Image 1: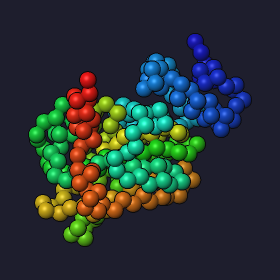
Image 2: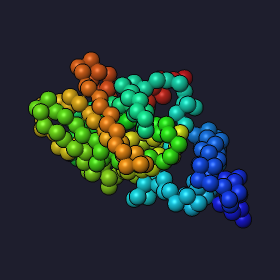
Image 3: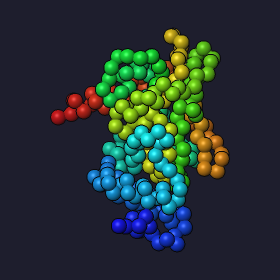
Image 4: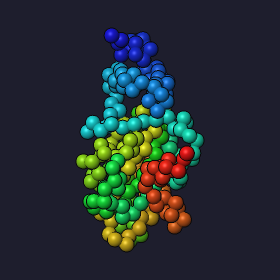
Amino acid sequence: MESHYEVLGVSPEADTEEVRRAYRALLKRHHPDQGGSRARFLRIKRAYETITGEQHAPPDGVHVEYYDPTTRDGTPPIGPTVDGSLLTLSLVGLVDGVALGRLLEHPLEFGTRVTAAFFTAHNTGDRPLAWRGRSNTSFVGDDGFLYQGSNVLRPPAANLPSRWCGTDAEIPPDLALDAVVVTQTVPEGVSIEKVVYTQPGPDGSRERYLFDIRPGLRETLDRVPYERERERDRKEP
């Protein structure tokens, strides 16, 4: 059986940066989104995590799909994008008063109505980054109050549509994930004016990503992204 070093194509004497470079190249080549083998992809991840001690799986075991954003269809994000030194973060949806059940793979009209924010987070650095959407996202209402992310999505997180993440995760270098964050209960009639995500860096630094939600932008974002995608797929021949 191949050793972890053989899986990555590096020698046991390779330093961490060499291991990371090999890992990043192999992820792009073997990712299932690019037609690669899922078994091989997981073997590469396991080898990297074993050698470096860096874990990329969410703590509760929910599967997270990472992808290379440069290989997507080239369609730019619908919402605003903030380029930071740690992440390129796009807000691709912000929906007020959505029933929790509508966010699941098989939509149902049940549960508390929440405000849901949808992000695409691209790790542009050369080290893994901790995505902490629930705890590090804040929502500012037009009532002047601050609303934090809620863990109400965590129990059904495994039932989100494929590729959408509702839990904490570790984003590998050069890869991205699509994430959903829901708020604590927001009073009826209150609209969110700002969304702020704070990203912790590997060296203990912190970087803020601020999105101002203007009226025209709100209209653009007011749709669950994967509902939009399903509608588009139905229209395509």
